[in-house]
Length: 81
Image (cartoon, rainbow, N blue to C red; front, side, top):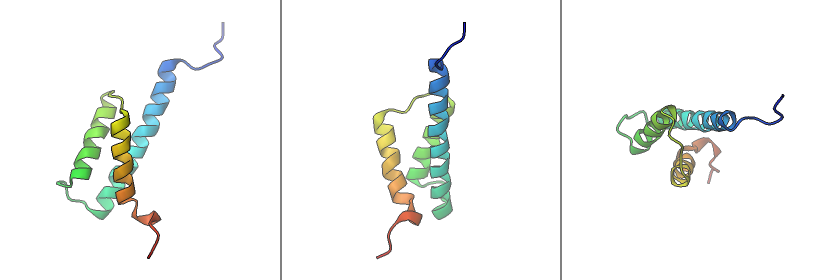
């Protein structure tokens, strides 16, 4: 018997890998502009990376916070005024 769809665990692992990749990119962006280990945004992102590696799922608030931090540090895409 062959399965047409993916197992839920496989789908969740794929999503987790996508989120982890994005958090790693965000971590590198912050470090490239402010390598201070005391930066609160960097501390938060690194703690979430640890959580993801530990199997913790991000909730809506975590993702909203990540988006806010991304907007702050996504300096390359800011329009020049």
